[in-house]
Length: 358
Image (tube, rainbow, N blue to C red; front, side, top):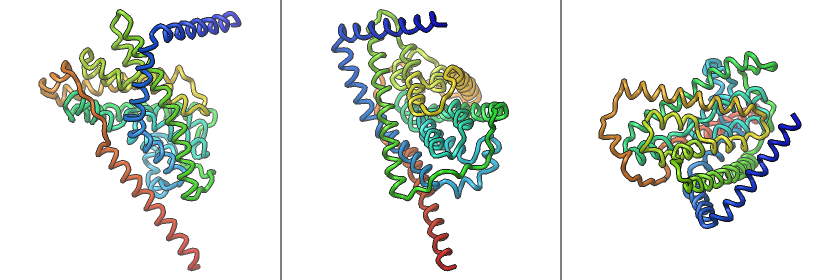
């Protein structure tokens, strides 16, 4: 064992030394890559994900989901999650990478889900959001919104199926199985405190996410200098640029697989967010492969049952102009969460009025 540990350390040292030498040789390439990564973070990731980071934390800190969660007990029992765990599932489906991990980390830090449930959900809630799949991949990349909806359906089904299987099986095997009811041990934050806490937490998560994105974009661009085809390597490492690089060599089912897989960059983003939740990273990786396979099969069936005309895929071999902006999906999500908050505030005010009357 000691020999293995020493070998591992030596390997890491040699890898780091080699990386430093490569950066010194290809200075212009890595500088341009860092600038590209910062540009992606500032113009793509932060505008699209920071609001969801903030809102996911805000919803949890204010407990504004509780009035609705009380009526969704049957759904939590179907999936084998607590009512608070159900919040994380919904936020994952609406926000996409890596909002699910952010929701889990916040729920766990606030003692609203147990460590057992946090671990199980961490293996499951990794999926792309509607803005990325419908707008970016469907409309911008493949010039067909229907195809984006197919990818979204395949992604949602894979996430929900993985969640159902893991929560049902792993919860039964857990030494400390959780219950379906919510855990009410968290602090009662005021509106101002909730905003401050959600903002600070979201900034930390966003900076961590941007750091990983820059590292993987630099790695991708350095790999392009090799005299080999690196497209598939790029999509394994980072999903956004990888989909762009591989859209001419992958089938639609293949794209669905890698979107379900998520990319190593997304995996590390989630590891950084849920660092206080100690999970088995090998099992996490296997779950991503299984999720990719489910997405592949679902997409294959969809295209067989509801085929899309061949003209749609002609755009795959053409140059792609990618534009990123706010989407109607994001707007609906913001409106929905705002309505939940207003309803909860109104409900709380009514309770205070009744207490004063008594």
